[in-house]
Length: 146
Image 1: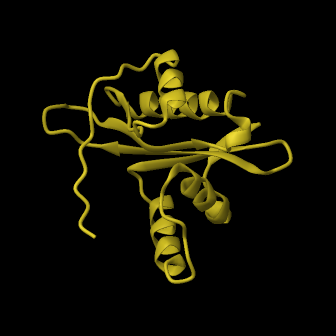
Image 2 (image 1 turned 90 degrees about the horizontal axis):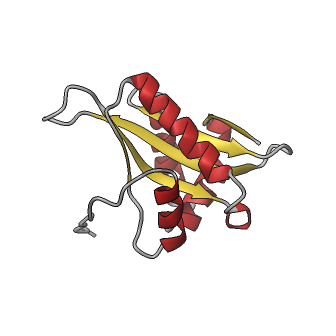
């Protein structure tokens, strides 16, 4: 297994992994817009998007890492809005490799912390994050507009 930066060729497998995470499925109607967002994100200096790739070339995990400013901090915060591993490979070290690379990049970027959001129902993932050395420190609130 290898962890590397996402490329344009990873679009379909990354979208499939995100759908497994609970994000909207890309459809024929949304594909062009989703692809444009994906392409723009690849060029964004404030983000590093990572994939875990099996020895046979299959994309088996995805981690979105974004660097964001906080008004009360002098350094960026590293934020992981999405981390997903193919269900059949959970517990096999893929998530640890992705999150480890995200931490390495965040430290190299000079970030003061790494923050990750996770849905309540992903209790197995929560145990993994705590084992990785992360603390459960907040709740997230959402108000949908559509």
